[in-house]
Length: 544
Image (cartoon, rainbow, N blue to C red; front, side, top):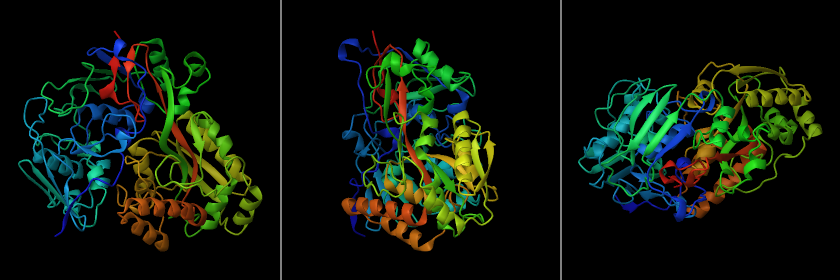
């Protein structure tokens, strides 16, 4: 088999890179101290287990503790976009058909108890995430591994395609997997000790192999993270550790604690930071030293359930809704134009490959065109819309209800007590039998690449054996699969850009609203940091 080195795919992990800011200088930086984090239950930590965590705060914390085969450097763009080896000695050797990947591992990495990181640590991470008792969202990125289906079904405990021999690690796939090198930079592939059990509730203690390790986790109370004194890599670790308080009563109070200096950082969606009562812009300005808003990669959209009678084989009604939405009015529920950028396409505007197709009106609805399409495709005219109980999400759902009433579509809003940014919400939507027709979704792919915005949303099998939208138009699906197999970078991005426009204009599997920015507020004592666009905790330092 002809072999090749793979390093040119250019996929980017959301946790691992995009934009940077260094507000501090060498004169006000210090090494050491405890960085204090505040999180609220509504937008905070779901799990600290690498197999289960699926929120931005969880991944930001795990990023400090994980050692991965491949990663993205803790550096500003454009270096942040270069996939580089971490525990791997070099980029993997890959078979000509992109079905077999072989990694050689460095010998210097150790877990926080001093034990070495070998290939079995990565094999166990995969098999543990595939365990049916865990129900890991990471299984989405592993189910095409040879033998993964047997593990997911409980017939085996290890996948046949995952082979570890000392410092050599090989993975075989049932189909071409050109993005696998980038997948290994996700926390799901984080090195874990072979004895770590597959706990469906998530483990509360484990030895990390990254710059830091988990000392204590009490759900709903606190997380304590400290340096890994055996760390063998080169990532920065400027503070002594992190104390995470999980008891902030609300995202707004969490922000106030950071503003008052009682915490150094906290995470929630950007719209909350723009609450006029907080006055952050007036007090700190934007993108200066404490308060930052950077272009994000989260697509806020209405997903259509194409398996339900209202939208099945009904692109005319899906397009009618796209024409009927007043996106500018909906944008206000996330903080306005300072925080989000209106869109009518699947790919964010800053993503490589994006082309502006000017498909639907962004600043005002086209009700005449919407009504003309809806008049011949309305069917029952009744739809159930899912959203979370988060106030901004409920506000948006009520606005959608009013706007679609203009074209004769009657919406029943049902609130789900799960935040729309969590895996639990998406898994519920993907579950068979859930009676939703529309759903508000924050789509934050873990790989900042067109594949994650088109294939994972519409074509790749979602956790639970289905896709989120149940989109089933074979001509489009064949094209989606064909583009995914294009390996030449320029042609690949061009093909995705054209496909994005065609899908939005002709099939309308979703109704995009806007791309949400990432907001960051830090305390006065934070002297340096990197925004990727979520804060890179391994790079933070404290002022003297």
